Image (cartoon, rainbow, N blue to C red; front, side):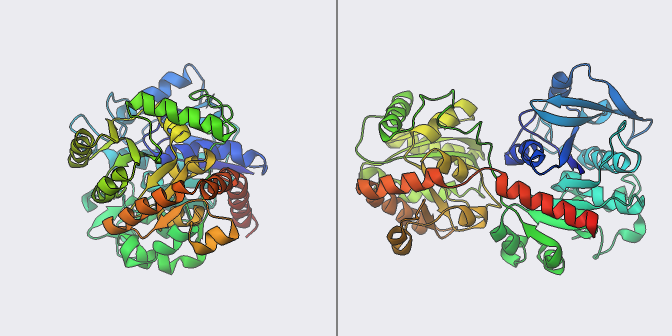
Length: 473
């Protein structure tokens, strides 16, 4: 079975967030299910540098304003079809944003071109390869199911919502330019609050819809989390499935991670903690070292941590933060870091440091207001770094709370609190200090965490079953 995965980013080639990790991991995960997946990716400069002189397998004379070609290559272990369209993707700044931090004005055309290319591959093939299924990810691939339908290609499609907060808007005056039919611009079709929505096109015309956790699949059907799409998602609930993301357990492996001293014992974990404290200039402490590796945005809820932080630090706790994002949140954390001896803040991102933080931390905080799946808590579980998470989306699906029942049954893997509440986060930090003080309980939780399955095996089987259901339908 051949599947074309369509996405705007793919690790390890080009990445701005967790979407790239998922897209990059799926092809290898699905091989054991006899699924051959290739990823259609825009030919950004960084991608073209990795592709080198690989041959073109198809050409398009005019794809949204200029010529384009498809290049087949394996990069970083991922089988790619790269859409080289220099008039759309050969830009020296960000893949979504210009030098001023604003969306590229032609983002609708850029990603409509990606979607159109996917439909053409499904119809005509790429060399001797033609997919049985096309699987689009988020709004950047939202027009794929629409084009497949309008072009009468006859290849079924799957649409995955990684984050419904990004609808992929375009002005209605662009209908013709985007090769969309005026007859389809209405509330039951392309129209979303007076604009075209690429994500809505994907949700309306795809054969099946998935999202990245069972809880998020339910949350999307509510006004609170649906971001205006809740009615449509409810209408398509029979075609909706929540499939948890996994992580690459080879890349995130405490036994072989080149960024850390290998550890398989509690003593080795202590060495990693000591090294992390030294790296950030923190003194030794008998309290827990909590780590935060996150974008600093309202969604991630890190403003909520600041209120309960002084009490946590007063009890001997320490905290290390690595992240960047909204300027006001960056400044708030920098001010807190200057004020509190037990808090170290580093604005920016460093992949190697994120591994060292997972290895050396005792707990990892993920207090998101909403979180479709989340990968950070899975990294924590893998490294025996106890997740302290909000009860939302994939966080709720992957972490077992250390409440009385969880502790009695010996299955607790983390601390779960109500989302969106500074008081709830403060209570969770207090629970963290209490649980860490009971070393027998903490050791049991750490063992539970490291035994929790976080790889792709179960999820890959679920995707393969979904694909097969479409082919045999």
